Image (cartoon, rainbow, N blue to C red):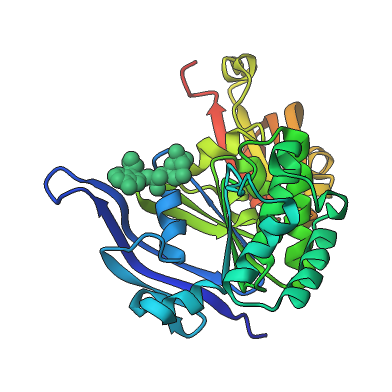
Amino acid sequence: MGVKRLIRIENLSKTFGNRDNGVVALDNVSLTIEKGQIFGIIGLSGAGKSTLIRCINMLEKPDQGRIFIGSKEITALSGKQLRRERSKIGMIFQHFNLLSSRTVADNVAFPLEIAGVPRTEAKKRVAELLRLVGIEDKANAYPSQLSGGQKQRVGIARALANNPEVLLCDEATSALDPQTTKTILALLQDINRRLGLTIVLITHEMNVVKEICDSVAIIDNGRIVEKGTVLEVFAHPQTEAARRFIKGVIQIDLPEEIKNRSLITFEPSEKVMLVRLSFIGESAGEPVVSALVRKFDVDANILAGNIDHIKEVPFGTLVLELRAKNGGLDAALTYLRERGIEIEVLKDESTPA
Ligand SMILES: Nc1ncnc2c1ncn2[C@@H]1O[C@H](COP(=O)(O)OP(=O)(O)OP(=O)(O)O)[C@@H](O)[C@H]1O
Ligand SMILES: [Mg+2]
């Protein structure tokens, strides 16, 4: 199966200001984005997200590194060639950037005018685009007469006017309420699927990533600190930065009463442990707890748990107090690991409270 790379970013660096007291916005960033993917880039304010996405269409010129889109090195182009390649990249913004003196239809027609598309053809295309984003009834309205969600639909229609290969989204839902955010994300996903359009989406919200992205990269202080499929990153976060973002979406912090729970043994051969099990995929549905009780004579006390879905794949965690005699716990943990369940020992009886 051929997975096609569409965007390749190699060793990209960008410093604002001079070398001695400048701000390093991007520090040796490398990324590969596959065709047809929705690729999320998440980071805190000032991490370098906008700078990175603006480099992809050369609104910002990197100091070092190269960017390929398809087989073309966009960082090597200038003038007319750059403009031509740029027209294959659409972009939408947090504050929509619509022209307030133009109607919705004329906003969407704007890039077509610039590209020299004949009037009648442009008119047809605009109607098509407004239908695609679900605001055909607003064609003659002005931006000031629209809600935030409707404005972003205009932004999306305008960005798609020239049939781009890539859509860049810079915090496209950050100015919207949670409900409207959902509808805009659903629209982006629909466009991604229907047109096979590759979407690069930057955000500071893990919810957005969880909702529609296939892959994600985490940017921290201008560096990519983690990347992978969304499922990989959620199930096995490698960095503190990743864990911090995931915490905003799924509960990974333990309640205080569980953290402070004292583990008491009643006999010398008894062992008691507080563990967190992480499941992904099929094992999430398996009755592992009853298997522990049956096969290993383990007492299992369920203290917390949750199951969530990412791209239809179930994944979840379970916090258990496990108690057994005569080495039963070690055998039980081995059994769980063999089933692909990840185990984090939060506490055992030898850990001081
Ligand atoms: N034109 C500029 N001149 C000087 N410094 C800049 C410029 N653009 C960005 N920076 C600096 O580069 C760093 C990265 O900025 P960038 O806008 O890429 O961050 P961001 O991740 O998009 O943040 P936010 O989430 O707040 O939009 C910041 O420290 C910022 O102050
Ligand atoms: Mg930004």
